[in-house]
Length: 387
Image (cartoon, rainbow, N blue to C red):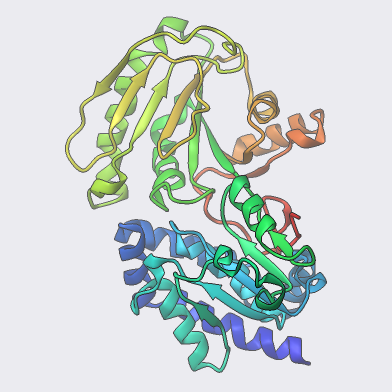
């Protein structure tokens, strides 16, 4: 009965908040874009809609999440960059009846932040979440860990080194939950690039490149009748034109100065060029203010994943079904691929011949930041302990 009461209480409160104007305004301030906030919340509601009207489904997904195998008390250390990522695991933890502590970062500590507004909504409905100030640090408890760390599990958003650091700081009995480094790749067909460009922008910028599900690499599948000499200048010019054509209609607002990283075009098939000497030279396509910058680099390695979208022309002889496992083998941190819906079946069939560690989650282009609330994260239970 307690579980059903928690589910009945938690999901409607969170849904009402996510639908509110105050949530959109606060998230827009947090991530630096009203448009990005609107799209991110739209994606969140779509994922939540998977379970919001079905208590039986939600109960099933709570079990799939692994949270029921944990102890009673959970500490969540949310990401510094995109507070919306907190909502899904927080909903699972609260709906499962766990006692949740939440360590705020400095951007979330002020009273009108997205996170603080969400927690106030929960408090007003009688759902308790303990807030810890940004000054709270596990390392400050040195020598007092056995008495001070009373959580059964700690969920941390961060890279592999951050997860390892937390593991070293807490008692051995404390379960550490973290999914480590993750990269999202998008795939598009050159001949449909114009039509797909709004979805590509959404995958890349709907969290202003501040989330693990935001695309970092775009593979453009080139047609068979285009020679290798095409891939550099002409494609760069076409991408620059598509940016100018679609940015304002998709976004309606300039890219904030703090998100000016932009796009990098690299001219090669990464796997066939592996080990080749990098060519020198980076040129720019100058675009109007308010648009992402476009750099053109003749460098043979696209996997310098950072806060930009890398665009990699891929020869026609490749297909999503063989490209995905090959790239996954080279860069294991690739965990999600978005591609046109008509290519998903081919990619799935191709993956059946690949090794298990080559598999990735697949979603339609434009839905990178729209995971279903099924208790999983990149195909693994979201609360499964890492260590």
